[in-house]
Length: 340
Image (cartoon, rainbow, N blue to C red; front, side):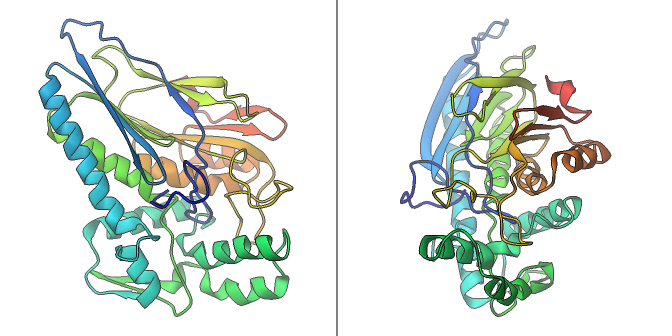
């Protein structure tokens, strides 16, 4: 997520969309060895950003060009974090949550709001960026009183959740009095997309960015080879369960196996606004898209449906999706095999 304070865990604690975004499932990127006529050189760097490590790997004929492009990409990432990080009192999102109004919202914020609305539509608004008041209340109540939010308190918060509490008019954005937004479940993917665009504009053709599990490939490892991405087994073994091949595509995964709010492990980073409970059907859900932003949001929103509904929605919208259920059954949508 966009949290820049490392207080609860070393890596990601993502509160996003309707819920906390993808817990950082591990992805395993097969090391690339340039095996073509162009003699590509490998340049790689990782920085602690967005409560995780952002790793950029580039293969290019010129190491100097690759390093220069990489630094520009990292600068773009830092620039965008300053817009979306709700834990930073100086960010635009933090200002909006506090004062309920932005009169000159940056273009990037408006873009993420627009994409969030589209993801919300696909997921019947289970992906809901106005969920933050409920997320904060659930986490607080679990710490103090136990694993369930009182129905009375839930009823008090519910009116502040929903897109009707967010108004966008040109560059002006307004929130209802008690509403707040979190873009942590989608903005990280957007930031990755923008960093890839920086690399492309610097004439980089072969690169991959991994922001704690939100991955976007620029081209392939080489001209003729895709990037091999291993998806972690949610059983906690750290093993690779499935591998996908990506070229100019992105992948994001949500899972229930890392970040819990309670000792019983019934409440984790994804919470449904109806009843303020975590779904129990799915252990891991991966989405492939041309956009890391879209993959990020869909991996969160789709997680809140039963497996059969996820596959039905994915097939209706031609979304490549893989589900691992709590019973360790694997289901994929029709488009998933294109990347297997």
